[in-house]
Image (cartoon, rainbow, N blue to C red):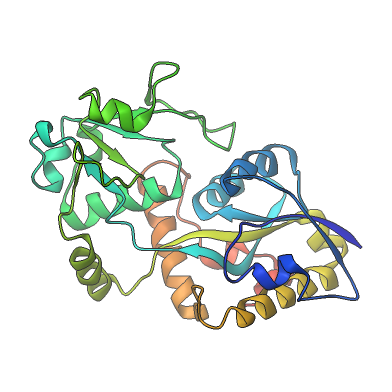
Length: 282
């Protein structure tokens, strides 16, 4: 069976994409999107792939609108988030709560990094998210979601708006430009403290399969999972690896944050995100 598949270039996908990991059951036809997140919209809106890397918040939102896809317990990307928040030095933002009343830019309000950071700001630093003026630049991947944020003027670039003082802060970006400073000056220390408290490594991207593939060809879904795991093993520790308990804890937290922020109608139980085929792979 030939499968259309969307995967980014990661250490743990290298063996799969090079053909070093093989299968007698499936042939993989890789889609080329750079960056990979450009392929999330066609997957959600058109079912463009049989297997796809997918931002976890995009998947949660897709589930809330009954999009025909199912989660696989295969992590593609995970990272701490504190370093992805920058400010304009002239805005006078010294601590996280200083974001209140400010103009904060984010690529899309529904990005996973944005959801993680807003959840961290609200739950761990006491920031009132409703007191922030959010400015966005892209539509959500899930077309049915109604985005009520202010849209940046056409043609404007997010970091240039920060440098020009049109934004006071930006979430989801890094910069070593002298015209920007970190919201958390020692982000690594903040991340260590946050992990000591939460015990969670934030998951950004997972993997999904089409519901049709899972319903009609469960053996193929199991084979895809096997190949992903074999490719991860070939990366020799250069990729994020989670136990089921660790992955469950991370997904539970981002699901809670997403529900708090109105991205999904309720916090789903983790088991709800899988079907009977993929749940058995955990």
